[in-house]
Image 1 (spheres, rainbow, N blue to C red):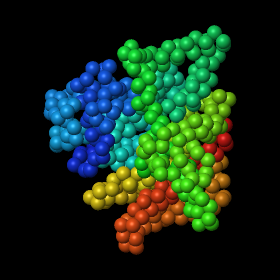
Image 2: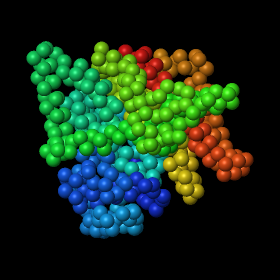
Image 3: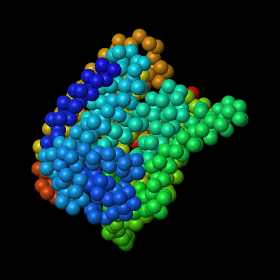
Image 4: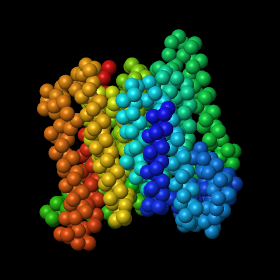
Length: 505
C-alpha cells in the first residue's frame, strides 16, 4: 500500500495547485445540488426547478451530495443556500468542492490498489501511475470539475472483486455504481451475462439459489436507492430526469465517435446536392441541444433516434456477450467491460466526450500485461486526453493541459519501454504478428507515429494557423477537426478491441 499512497499523495499536490484554475458550469451544478439536497425534503429533489441545473444523477449520488452538504454548511452556509448561493464561487466554496473531488478519489486509489496488489513491484507502479496520474482525469475532474474519479474507483473495485472470483460482491458494487451514475449502465448486459454464466453455474438447484441470492442483493441496492422516490410517487419524474432523450444525438461538443462521420457526411452531401441544383432543406434545429425532440435532423441521411443507437450499441457488443456466455473468464472481464464502454461511446445517444474515461481507465489496468495492450493504450490515452482539450478554452489553462499530456506521454514511453524491454516472458502471438507486419518491437509503429504527428498538426492548425488565416471566421472548424481526427483514433481502438475479443479464447 505504500506505493499506492505515494502515487496518490503526489497527485494530491498537483490537484492542490489546480484549485485556483478555471472551472466550468459543472461547478455550479454540483454546488447547487448540495444546496438542493440540504434545503429541500427528499420528495422535492427531482421536481425542483429553482435553478437550470436540475438534479439528473441517480439517487445514490443525490445522497452523496447531501452528505457533502453537512460539512459544507458548517464551513460556509452560503454554499448550501438555495437562493443566496446561486452562482456562488467564493474561495471557501471553491476550495471545499475541489477538496471533495480529491477526497472522493480515494475510491480510485482503492480500486487501483486492489487490482495491482498481486503484480510484481515495477509492473504495479506503472499501473498505479497510469490510473492515478491520468491527465484526462486531472483535466476533467480537477480543472473542468466533475467526480469521475469517484465513479471510476467504484468501477475498479467491482472489477477487482470479479477478477478475484468474488462475483457476488462485484455485482453488488456494480449496482451501487449504476445507482450513482446511470451512464455506466452500458456495461449492464455484460455483467448480467457474465454473472449468469460464471456465478449462477453448477447443478440446477445451486444455480437457482445463487441467481436468487444475486437478485436479492442487487435488488436491495435498487430499493435503497429508488425506494423513497417510489414511496413519494415520483419514480416517473426521476427516470424522466435520468433519461432526457430530447437532448439530441450529440453533446454540445461532439464526442469523437461514429456519429461525427455520419453528421459530417450528411453536411457534405447536403452541400454537394445543393450545388448540383437539388432542393435540400437544411434543418434549423441543433444536433446538440434539447431542441431536436427525440430525433436528430439530417438533411440527406436517414434520421437517428435513441432506439436506433441502442440497437447499434447492443449489436456492436454482441461478440463480447457471446464470449462471456460461452466461456466466462475472470481474466478477461476487464477487457470485456472496457469494450462494452467503447461500444456505448462509439454508437450511443448524446455521448459526452468525457465518457472516454470509462474506456481508458480500465484499459490502463491491462496495459501492463503485454506489449500489444501497452501500444494500444499509449495511442488511445493520448487521443482520449487530447479530445478533451476543448473543455479548457481559456488561454491561462492552455500550458497546463499541454504539459500534463506531454509528461504523461513521456512517462508511458519510459515505463512501457523499460517494462517490456526487460521482460523475459514469452511474447503473445499477437505481439509476434505485429512485429512481422512492420510495427517492430517498439512502442509506436509507423502508422501510429504518423497518426500522432497528425494530431500535433491538428493542434498547430487550431491554435495558430486557423486564427492567422481566417481570423474570427469559421470558429467551429478547429473543434470539428479535433472531433473528426480523434474519432478516427477511437474507431481504430474499437476495431482493435473487437479483434482481440474475437481472437482470445
